[in-house]
Structures are given as structure tokens and as C-alpha cells.
Image (cartoon, rainbow, N blue to C red; front, side):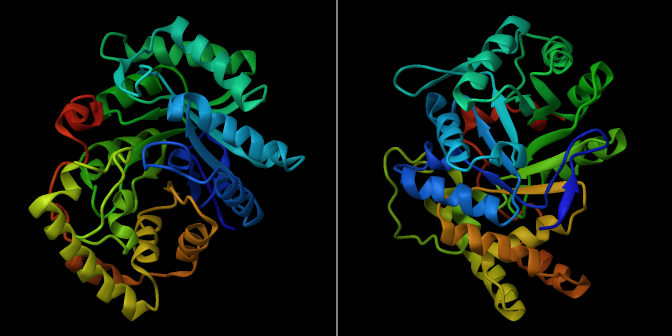
Length: 334
């Protein structure tokens, strides 16, 4: 497994990380035993970066990671655990904003440490900017936890260039987590250049566009009511038709390389720079193995041109989140 470093101050991690959200939340029912087996397979393959959020299934995702690591003595030292915090949810699973107050930061962290069964989190980040709290206060509170040894590195998620600068002026920032891939290239405008200027790495989620670029989605596929893709702008109506046409265009490029659509999409993100670590949301060992196969796909200049022709920047139809959620993305505000 090749490694990459999260920015100038962050840890060395596997070139591909494992996003664990779908193992307990958001994509409908999941198989706990298979999820744990997938985490174990990832560790066996040299994957070290495990990404979670304290609000994924109201803490169950953290408990799943705890159980997976406890079943493998010594694996906590191998894993680099990245935790997002701050999203508020109700008993029905609804969303109620974000809380970045310093007292809330410390409270969220205390609960995460307990659920994960560890004495520290490797990378800690607020999931979305709290518009009521200056980013300096939120980052400052995490910095205090770094000094106390309960956090190793500070990260951010879905913030814009201005917020990134303010945060970096407050404390060292290891990486920015942001949606980035063939279907989500907005970060290239100002956020990615600013991160590079500041020596901040990028962990890219959504590289497979929530399954669209997995190459298996069809127009006839039905989704579980608990799957948040039901009603998602990119998965409905004419938008879905357009997006699946893009997938088929990419499939031709992938076939010519002897790769799958998913592997080609991940390889494209890997080619964007050694400061970018794609997160794959594999929920099964089979999908994990396919995703890790992207490390063997080398895209030369001709291949990259073919990928760009198949999926031009801005060609995807539909917003990357429903309109209400788009409003919470500081990264979309420049």
C-alpha cells in the first residue's frame, strides 16, 4: 500500500482511505458482520485511514469501528481515525443544524472517545461550518484538545477558501475533507488552490458520486426509503438519465484500460496530486477489493484526456446535495 501525507503537518496515511458512513447509515440497511469484515480486509490490505462521524447512525458507526478494532488486537495503532462532529440530529433521524461552540466541541469529543474506546482521535473536524460561531473559536477548541493529547491533528470539512485561511491562521490544519471527483469538481476553482497554498491536504469523499460512478446503477433501480439517494437531485428524472449516459461514456474509457468504471474514477482522483487521498465508501469486501484495484490503474496523458472528454467538468446534471443541504456548505460560497 502506497502512502500519502495529509498536508504539511498531518499524518502519513494509506493512499486510499475507507469511508465508513454507509456501514450503518444513509444508504439503507447494512450487514454488520460484513461491515466489520470489510474493515478487517481494509486493514489487511494496508488501508490505515478510517473516516467516520459521531452523527452517523447516532454514534453506531463509531461503535462499529470500535468493535472491529477490538477484534484485532493492536489494530488501533495501525488505524488513523478521522471523526467529523457537530451535526445535530433528532430522534427521528432528522437534521437540526450544526454546533461549533467550544463547549460543544469538547462534549462531542468526550462522547466519541468513549464510543470508539480510545484515548485519542487522530483527525478531528467539524462536519459543516457553524455560521453562528467564528471558525477561530471552533478550531481553537480543537487545538486545546491537541495540547491535551486527546486529538492528534485538526481537520476541516466543506469550508471555503476564506474560512480555510482563517482556520489555518489559528492552528495547523492537516487536511480538508470535501466532495471531489469527476462529478464534483467545484473545489478546483478556489478551495483546492488555497489548500495547496497553505500546505493543507485533501481527503476527497464522493469520488464515486454516491454509487453513480460505481458503474452498476440503472434507471430501473429502486432505493430503500431509508436510502438518502431517494429523491436526490442526481438520482431522479432527466438528471439520472444524463448522469448514466456520462457513466457509459466513462465505461468505454475504462474498458480500454482493462479497468472498471469505479477504478477509473478513483484513479482519476489519485492522479490529481499526491496531496489528495480519496475515500471509498465500500460496504463489502468485494467492493473494497475493486476500489483498491484503482491503485494499479495508471492513467497517462491520453487516458486523462479521454476521461475528460467522457465526463467534462460541469457535465453532471443536478446539484450534489438537495437544495436545503447545499445551503449549509461554506465551500459553495467561495
